Image (cartoon, rainbow, N blue to C red; front, top):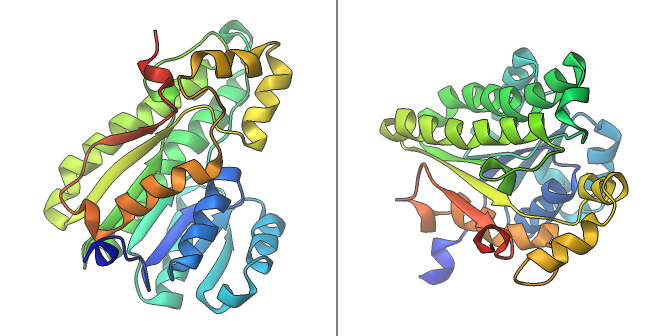
Length: 255
């Protein structure tokens, strides 16, 4: 019975930002669990390369190039997913960007790019999947951040966008519970990805401070997020909606 609770076999899962560190870790885990996957990312070459690393699963994977800040592209991606697999059971919004600098130095274009991808893009994908998902119910998982809850001096638009993702998650959960669509968020802490490696270059001493202030005394890995993603995608979480799961090694509990 326990295995059945976490069963993802034949679930149709659409993952945005699939070529990123977190997205690719979830992709590999879900493929091994028997899910059918739609991998959406603006880096088409990267997601096609990701598909090539899973030759035994290629018949159950569709790669789609997408810019999530454009509503029509999100709608088209969902339409292609339904054409290929007949439905979408799970949407995981993992697309995200960040540029670090003092808040007084952000240009309008940089601000707009971060907020449009992280927040507007998440909403666009949720809205696009609503109609087909409401026919049978489903799960939406938005990837937020510990910066949905706390912040620092160098991430004003990123923190604003990820705070918005958390509130969006709660609002959609309230609106779509009647459609049997659960909407939850995962809030990663300091995870070792290409995006966070740039922070160690941009902010002197950042890598060391992360370890010092994280009770588990290490950086997280993308694979650390897989368990929460499986839980929120499976029937084990059928009475869970409008909430978030911190995967941060205890950093937000530390004072």
